[in-house]
Length: 237
Length: 380
Ligand code: SF4
Image 1: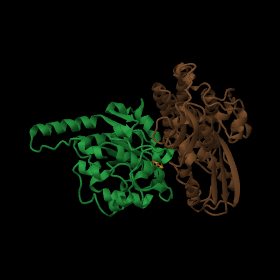
Image 2: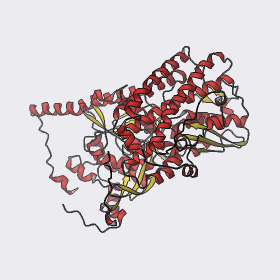
Image 3: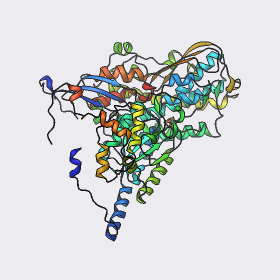
Image 4: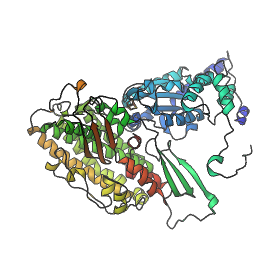
């Protein structure tokens, strides 16, 4: 994450009318070309193919599936997340480039739904990552999914879909819940704190008890070294 | 497509590497992963890595009333939920000695076969998409939606119908429903020629699928393979005919088989099964108007229902293979133990692991989709 400082930050030029027009344009374009990450966590995913294909046709709204998290804008959590999946979901979420939006489809993401007493699922999604929009139902129909996406488009256009900033502002809270579930030595390859500094979003809730715990346990993740047993050299910058 | 005579060059063993294939990968069905060890692009070893969809069904079912479990079981296999409800209901009926009325049995057959058609169309769509043929996927999913409309009309739910209860079915068919079933069947039958041209006879698909993931009959039997995958190795075994339940013994249908046991043969068996399901449904539509009577047997107050102690084992033929329930009751209001023997846990774990070895990495998707494994049911 050392190279992130080299990316120039565009300072918001307040008061400049041209900048406001530009912002408006950017928001409009953003809301009209959204890529959904192709990751299906639970049974609600079965209503996504109908929503995407000929009958309900999400593409007419400018929404398409995308296979890689780095290029995707929307993370759709389609149903219950088991604890094993939740780890991957968090890794994926942190890899996505900002601005990013999270939609929780299905009652299971709201409060556990059918599986409220299951030992294997995480109950409330918004304890682990900020959620922009919930589409409740078991399972929501394709029309409901599309209506939800339209609502997301509207709030992106209005500049209200800012939950990703919340992840940086309150990182300590989210990390704490993650640590409660996955153990104290939980860590991800993404340096969220450095990113928070980069976006100028470092605030009171970013650092705290849990991030200090993270620092204690954090080891530099060396790519490939764990599985193959080869002595690969550090990749040079 | 692969060039003829292509052979990866043998490299020193340091070129072997491992890849995590899935869980977020379009070549994998659902939320499921494989750890593969590769040499070049040839798979040396594959290890299934499931558990992403584990919810602990068998434990959850012990904590709910007999009737509440009806709402839970369809979630085990999402693309083909109807056999799940039916198999569980049959188990409870056997424990209580309930006799299901004739009309309910015919309606249940109709629901099962509609569900089978929907599941097969969905599988074809997913399978075609891994070969890059997205039109088949768009068609398959859109045609499946017509069946979901029928489901919505007579059960109230698009995907999870929760229509069977122990003793019968929940509601009577709406007026004019059988007419609409016939129309939908006619439409789907008329589309099959198009599907043949677009997908089943398409050289892009045939060349990719022929000779991939070959399984002999002995291997299939040893690995616990059932359903269309077993029939693709030439063995005509179908629970509907060999251990009939409901009214399948009064219906006239064939058991399609293929000889090669490869991905192509498995897909063709499903294609023929689609025709057979349409044939069964036409007989049901013809017979149903003349069958009158109640649609469910009287059951005690479901909220205070103590099912007599005992154990039972039921099996049905789902679109993926043989689905069985082992249910034990200790005479209480909740099951003592429920075990689900789903077809996909064999297909997606041991069979997929073995069939992937020696194939190339892009053929894993062919193998997996042609086995038609359903990850939620593997993990349960
Ligand atoms: S809300 Fe219902 S459909 Fe959605 S994931 Fe939960 S059980 Fe499945």
